[in-house]
Length: 186
Image (cartoon, rainbow, N blue to C red; front, side, top):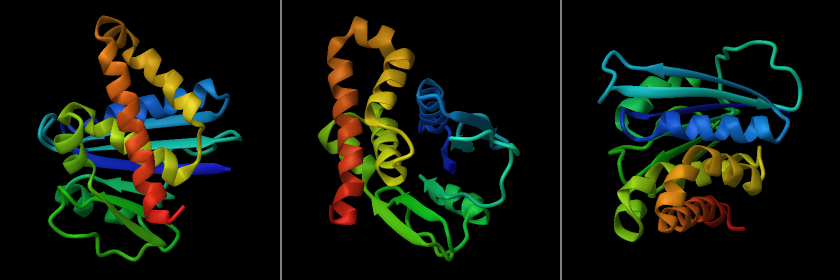
């Protein structure tokens, strides 16, 4: 099975970091992975999109026209990414950042308040890890242990220097996964 993912947000929201952890986890889980970063005209402050694919088989084509899941983390990201959506796509958007819901035709549109939760319950710095948890629960493309291993590879030095960061990031990951579980009524 091949899962096509598009993550889009403003520069600085950690979209590329999420994608790197995701594909590293896929690689370590013996999956075929592909990651293509895309930055807006402005390197910082512009829309940043990460295109990822995770598959059990060889990925024959690096680009795709429609994604299985699109994560939209800003109003401009919604505008830029509607082109990757069709009736088979699941959209997840952050309703605590976006002023309007996506209006394109999709299989499912799920609103989460990841930014609000990060700021009010954890730390603004783990917003992207909450989104990673949302993505993990929404796709089931990888196992939690694979994501945690990839987080250790990406953030292990920071975790070793400040052990409380490990707990904070793992809690953010769990909270993100629970956002989708709650929406699905599981």
